[in-house]
Length: 240
Ligand SMILES: [Zn+2]
Image (cartoon, rainbow, N blue to C red; front, side, top):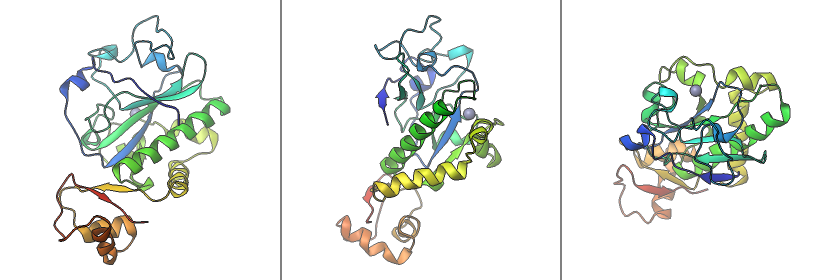
């Protein structure tokens, strides 16, 4: 992953400053033929290139809309594929037009004309690597990764078709994408940490993260816990 950071501090979403405990990742694509990151991320940092229209999202209401995401994947000025983090991962984004904003990290893949297989495979791989990175950071698994259209079916996002209108053109489904995220997680070892959510128990965490609630003493041992009391926001190491 070619990860850079340019936080959109002028966007009203950033200024609203609400935080979330990330419980999932929502994959979007922009719905416009413009693969250049400079369309959305600015001002130019020397890599993005200049946006002659100055209509990037580092302004109060880009295109007159209340909208902001946690990252964009697309092309730098020299054509290299990169990921730009544009909000702190634990800040509430305005990416899906539904309650998913309260708990999902959302990122956009910049669409091109949707016919270029080499561009698709490059941004697809970058997106899978970003998801694997975020899963490890926030103790999530590939099962917590959905796309916008799946969010709509779950009732937590507006009625958009991304990313399926694009992925299927190249024989990819979200299940295939999740399997690829899983492969990256397996290659790097299990998710190393988990952030305790409200209502969690050690048994429940062991059930979800280790496949068996009965393995909760392993989590206690690894984290030097003397009791089973845990609290929301606590970061636990998860055994392999
Ligand atoms: Zn979307």
